[in-house]
Length: 350
Image (cartoon, rainbow, N blue to C red; front, side):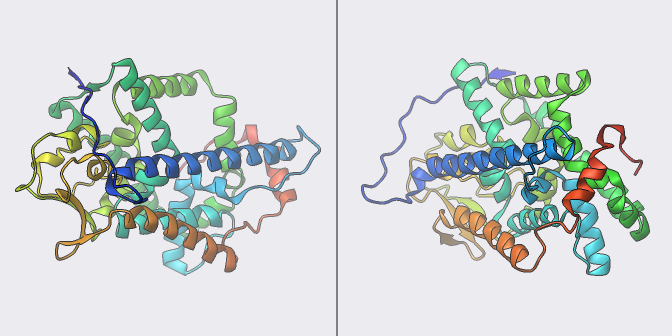
């Protein structure tokens, strides 16, 4: 392992009066991520209030925020298969399916835009990397170790796809969706953080500490969600293109890439590890050396990618809200009845 160098070179000064210049993309990304992270924390707080009411810890009723279903990707994958087979939208966790479809659409059209611009876990990983950089403890894994580790998230993805997409039939999926465990899956997730076991607590502490040393450890090596979006992004029409004739080989793009892609050695970035964050474009000191392009090598304003990500997410939310596919049809009282046995429910076999 080698200690990752910290660049001391100054970034190019942005053009006066231009709000969306390429070298401001990093600041805009931080703003969008932080805003979405704060909103996620707010949703978590709202859900905690509902959780306390549903478990009898509080008499004050608070509505259940549908957005928390975004943390149930396995349930969403089950719902997606059922949607494809029957055309029926999940009525128990509809917001979870909507968010899942939005993330897939981003991957298909906007690379891994959800990972690069919205994912709260990705934002937390970025903060951990910044702290590790300040402490000067970041390390760069050698390729012979990094590549096998990257395969772990795809193995996890393959496992879930095999169990859900291949083995489970429609009757089994519908039986799982209506069982009490699926109704309270969001509560089980919250309980995981509120009352972690020794093993769970140890894993969380390990992930936190190792993220200070190895940048984006969870995202790069363990997240099956990111693995799925990465494979989807291979079909994306957008990509980063490098102009070798103007490249000065400063390798700033390599150092800032969250996926540790060797951008300086490629004419175009097609890797499934590219999260569409545009950090390489923002840090490149040579104008138009790194650009966002569409098919036919047509250059696009880089800001179109984050605008597309945010716009697509809002569009999916509004369509789901207007068509009745955002709020669960399960009544608060039904949730409360199932939350009463929350701690007694073990994970069902799949």
